Structure formats: structure tokens, C-alpha cells
Length: 218
Length: 225
Image (cartoon, rainbow over the protein chains, first blue to last red):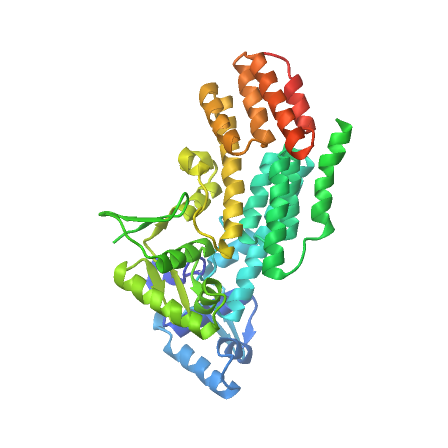
């Protein structure tokens, strides 16, 4: 049995999709994102945050009851604990173990439950960190064009991340593209001030110092 | 109906039968959804598109734009009670460009013409500034990559043409100046290397009062071939 959460939800057995009601999809997705067994009460309160505990419990019972017969083995139930059954292969799990060379995951697009957002942001942060690390390493060994490419990947996920902006700026300075470097600082300053009302930190401006140091050296 | 939405170089929607006339509110909505890259909550969409209106007025505007979009261009936009998104079968050049960058060699998948165009140049929206800037960085880097690939392949004429075109828009782009110098050198025209280099040194001094990077010095001093 396979469970797909990236790009869209799909539960399938040997390639044949199983139709699961929307509330069943949410339950399976919640169990799959948690990685450890979860108590019924916790699942219920996360899936129905706005209703009182007794109603939420009732809802959870009815979701389990209404799951199609084929989908039942996907959930392991042990007393008060629920988990995704260990026989289910989930695409999200592959992301936990595999290298981040895989394309950026798009976890359950269009879902806006708090726990989905938290999980989505966690995955994105992993990618941003991975790209930033590569950008940094490329800068260190003087592969500035490669550093630009890595930094831009990170920037596409999180454009206001200053660590990424600094890495991109270092790469532009390294490439000798000073005009582009000044323009980047101006654009970033402008967006940060209008969107968040703050200024970039000193790290960003310090990166520009290299331009003048190189100048003295030359 | 399948739609091709173009945002790079200016807004345009094409179908099998030709160009669609699209009103401004629908253009704004589609552009916003495309740069947001996925389905977006209604509230976020409403407050971004109508930042000066109270939330409920913004949401009402959004409902009416979605309604008009569904009637005039069915399938272009998908809606649910909580979110709005780009239709499933809609291709967007901006998103294709991003996808191309994830491939091994973006210069193979993107037509060179696209690399010289800005994201929605006629639209003034604060939410467009960052995506436009990032796309610009990506485009310029992709042109450099393309020039370098041409130089390596010995297609020096193509390389010089691309370099000149980029330098016309970005005269202070040293990485491109260096590629142009390298192309001249490989073509055996040392005077071209020197002229290109000197012109850049003057320009940089005049506009930013700066000197070129150490890499520039190395390129200038590289032995003739």
C-alpha cells in the first residue's frame, strides 16, 4: 500500500487508487506526518481544533468507521494510540532519508491546517538549509557562478532570508558584478522595509566591503 | 480549454483559438496566483490584492473576480471555500522557467529570447518586486551560462552576440565582460580583448568609482592563444 502526500493526496494498493473521504484523507495525512504513534485525543484536537473534546473524539470515531474497507489496514490502532501502519510506503518518508537531491516537495498543496503548514515549512527549511550550505561551500572555493545558482534556489523558497541574500551577494561580489551587488542590496532593503519595517543586518553591508578591499589590493 | 499564460515580457493568455482578452482584475489575480506558485488562501489573496480595503471588502472583490474569471475563462482559476489557485491544465511560462532551472541545463529548455525579458514589466505591484528581482538574477545568470557554453563549444560569434546584447542592458556586468574578453581571445583578436577590458574599466570608474575584480585582471593578463 502506498500513500502519496507530495503534490497531492493519494492512497493506493498495487497502483490502484482507493477513494478515501476527505476527513479520512486528513486523518491519514496527519498520522503520516507525525512519524511516531499519536494519542487519539491529540489527533482529534488537531483535526478539529474548534470543537469541544467530546465532539472531536466522536468525529474521529466516525472517520475511522467510515474508512473504506481496503483502506483499513493503513492505520495501526493500539489502545489509545494511532499510527500509520508500518506496511504503508509513504513518499514523505523517502524525503526524510533520501538526499535532498530530489525536487522540492510540495506537501499537500491547498491544505491549510496548522499541522500541515508546520510540516510544509519544516520540509522547506531543510531545502533552504541544504541550498545555503552548497552556496556557502561554492563561495568558499571560489565557484561563484555555482554559488549564485544555489543561492537563487534557496531564495525562490524563502526570498526574505538574509543568510541566502548574503550568500548571493558574496557570489555577485566574487564574480565582480558590483552593479548587480549594489542593486541587490537596494532591492532587499526596500522590500524588507516595506514588508517588515526592518532593515537588513550589518552582515549584508559587510559583504560589500570586499569590493573596496579588493580595490585597494588591485 | 487549455490555457498558456505568459508573464515574462508582459501579460498574455493564449488558447488553441488565439489570444484571450483578459480584464485587468483577472490579470492581477492570475499574476498573483502564478507568482505564489500554488493555491493560496482566500484571505491572503484578498489582503494582498486589495491591501487598502477592509478584509471583508477584499474578500467580496475576490469573489466577484473569481466569478467573472469562471464565466469568461472557464478552468483558468480553481476555487474552493478557503483557497484560490491556478487551474490544473494551465501552463505558466514563469513556472516553466523555474522548473527548467531545476533541470541539469536550463539553457537547453528555455528559449534565449525569454532570458532577456522581465517579469510583467508593465505591472506595478509590491508583491511582484521580489519575484521579479529573483527572476532577473536567474535570467542574467542563465545568459552568462549560455554564453560560457557557446564559448566552450567554440561558437564564438553566437557567444559575442549574446554578450553584447546582455551588456547593452547590463553594461556593468563584469562576469559577462570577462566572457566577452575570453571569446575575443579565443578568436585570436587580442585588440578586442584589450578594448573590451579598457572600456569596462573606464565605465566602472565613472559610474561607481570602483576598480574591477581580481578575476578581471587575470582575464586581461591571460596569454594570447
